[in-house]
Length: 366
Image 1 (cartoon, rainbow, N blue to C red):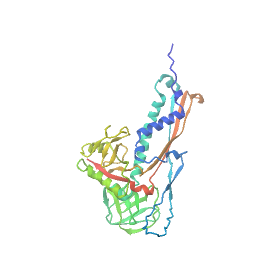
Image 2 (image 1 turned 45 degrees about the horizontal axis):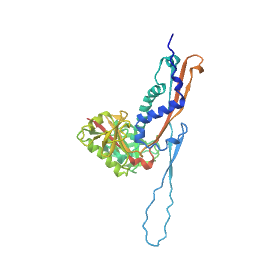
Image 3 (image 1 turned 90 degrees about the horizontal axis):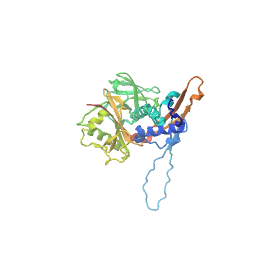
């Protein structure tokens, strides 16, 4: 008589599966450790936006005895964290596999699903964070030769006496007005295109031919001899921008980690140093930063990696797994396959008031 094994897919309910995925993502992605997740509970559906109030700044005035106080009218501003990233997963499980498989279905299938989710989320958030710092918080080799003029609506920048290279794409263009913009394209030695930080278009209007700076136009070379110096430069940039000193992080890759291991200032993450050493990717600390490692860093070792540092307030992140469902094989007319599907949605936002809480080291490694 054939052995009968109780189907394990019966335990694979949509609610349990969704909760298991959330648990795994929180344990295995970087974003809970490097972003502000305060607004995550406000997500109701993909396409939602979370309206965040930025408080007005309170001014201090001199006081003399008996004077009448002048009340300051506060004018808070509002910015939206838009849930605009939407990805689905869908897979099928044959009834034969259900009967022949005695592993825990929720844990196994959730683990398989979350692997791609993990890379997808980390790549997106690290790229976004690298492209949203103000120019003064970019650590690299700046370029300011010649002059530049910006067109009204296209964001096309025309240079005079410039030699702009393809490697400058991804750097930050600081106009004569002091405003920072992301460089998205390069057409020639005298033509590049810029967009607003955090946006997809340019809204800065006409900027007359004048001085400019491309922050971190080219990468610095990081070695075991100067790695601490470069990390301190990140710390200095954050300090000058009044970034909070607590909850600071630095995200590196394995090659950078190898260089750090040779630095006497690096403190490896051991149980005596951290109570929460199980945090995903945490390898230690240096210069006041908790250091996390991942291979999902923006850039390469030819034109430079963009290593992100900052305080958790720098970037806000909200993510949910929505509409998880299981369609049993009994609902299919032409197969014995049960279908599992779900929708992953998230949004991220660097609010203007927090832009100085992040910094980027553009570097090659040797």
